Image 1 (cartoon, helix red, strand yellow):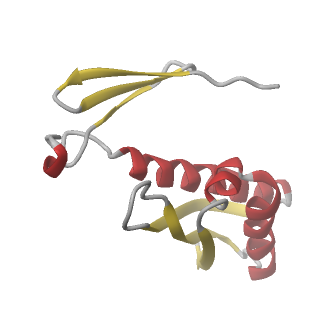
Image 2 (image 1 turned 90 degrees about the vertical axis):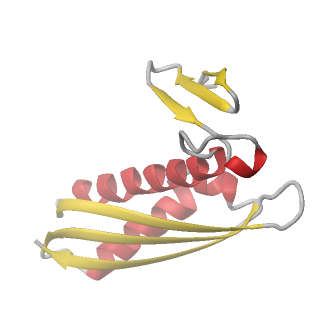
Image 3 (image 1 turned 135 degrees about the horizontal axis):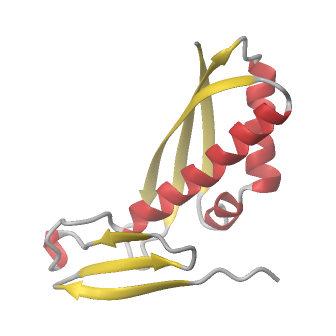
Length: 141
């Protein structure tokens, strides 16, 4: 089994420093309404960012393995959360804008489907509580 480690340490107020086992760090903070100072990304936003990163890496990798010339990939996510605790994601909308030279729509659609159904661990986990909907557009360039 693969193991991933992380550490989260209180900085001040509700600000937390998240450190990954791979040696990277980021600051998280809570909303002012719950004692935070809005000095960092919210933990639930970080989950969406993680899912977008995981899926984007998959899509770009799959397309490039298929010898498609991808020059950019932007994933935009919107999550709808439950109104009561735990406020899990109920719906996640994931839209890709993939830029490249002569990218066939069927190849982009296949890459997104493979990410969602097979490769993206973050989507698989979040998909346990949320209905995930994907869309895409292709930009020539």
